[in-house]
Length: 430
Image (cartoon, rainbow, N blue to C red):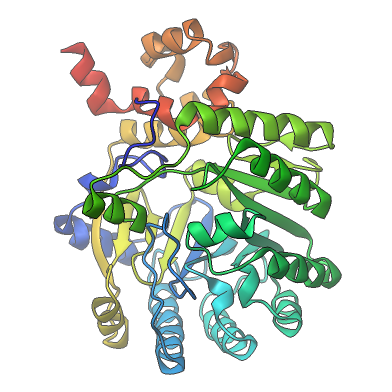
């Protein structure tokens, strides 16, 4: 992997890669919905694709030119899809263990729109027994009444997309909010008394320096959030940054990978000194005994995930699937009474094992005994050369009885996971 931040994928979100998912698998996905359920934990992800602006590093399906009528139609579409999904044999009667409102910007919706949306969803897929309900927010879309509404609607974890506290950097990267809106929103969030609060940061944004990064980290620590999530800026192909770079013929001047890792390393040390503990390659928590990430942990250990909304990714009964990726196709399907599945993939048992391995390693350690019992394959034996290489290169603190990544490995984790991918392993052996 190049030290420079080149256009292309970096963050590993799933396995096998999305490039292998095909429309030919749609009948098999629909058959899985119509079949009896598995005993896996069940989660729910809802994609709210509206934003005030499109960030220049964003690669998600979002819409910035919308009307109140668009938002209402889409909200009704989500409720209609929830009813369709809830009626499927693989879902009916099951308990939703976790819920995640992502985007886009879920907090783009008004308080009244949120109330109607949640009422519609709960009529089909109730989550009163959910262990965690996470809601992503953009600071400039919040108001004190809206924050109170989120608390009243049962959101247990609020995640505030701060990214940076420097207004010049926020503007250069296309963020819609400024620092004053962060502080105002945080006062409302803390006053509302959510069980868990999170702040998102991005290391290596356009215009970032080590000094500005230090100021952002210190301001974040002063908020006292229950958790802090730090991502290292990447340049996926479908971003404004990459489009502009190709048009101009010049590279986007963002920090290289060694610099970003050094900045995150410093932030980890500073947060640990302030009383936080490392929870993953991206996450720090103040109280590990109290702050749980049920969405992360259950998903990474193979739970079913119902995906609602345009372009959403889900997992059911051992199959991956994605919803229709464009507005008209998605809404046309749900308004016509059809599940909006557009493509899918049935991984092999070994590929599902790889998926849990690579996602689980993001936490910094891997329960190989659990995986051996679940899949009948010992990960330490089956990928012995990979583990030996990681240990020799200083990416592991220990290999047995459970692999534990070193800080170097934790900060580099997404660049290491491809070593476990089956295609790469087989190609290297040939």
